[in-house]
Length: 289
Image (cartoon, rainbow, N blue to C red):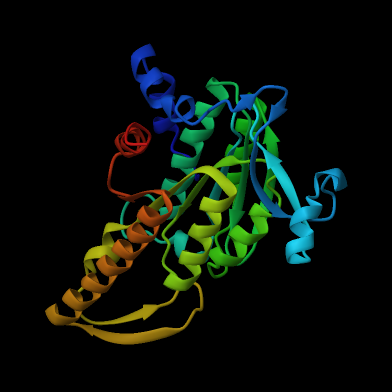
């Protein structure tokens, strides 16, 4: 079971004040830029088959010899795009919820807010490619379909956020609000590319890192055999105090590296552990948004 039903019950019992506070994640994201008769050009993106040919900017083509289309800001609600890591590493748990279950519940919390605000949201799973894409729609049925998808998801494969964000942003037709939930344990070069691309192709973006306390503290002792959940490769290691200290330092540096990239691009970043009560983590994310 991926979604924590108790967490969903807590969301339903939000009083008006709390609901207004957490749903401000949407209200603060909209803006109107209509001026006179026209609509302001927001930015450009590469032309892809299926795009409106009339949106191509031929002046840009004359300079670059590449096809780009104009994208406009309009007076309309943002579309929320929720991407959840379903790679093999998300199947991890020392005690309590698996990382995927925790991530899926946070994702469902954001979808719940979208339903209450009657706004469109889309979702997809990813590992080394994008799967189980749900097109943007409004309403409770969209929410229930997402919950069912998460409940039935299988965690497998390696994470390749660079490739997946490139695939997904190619499908986005307007500036949107992108939420990505993952452990983000992969090469920094891939993460950097993905975060910069998210910042370019969205109006707002949030990364939520989900880690298990066991993988942070290495709650094992002496000689132990580790298996990489994504590659199935194994290695026997002696967990000395010095080894644990070096490991924890590298993990901390990796997380700080993600934070620095997000700070540079204006993307919000939150790191949570699966032993944190879901509702507390969720409210902290949307209140600090």
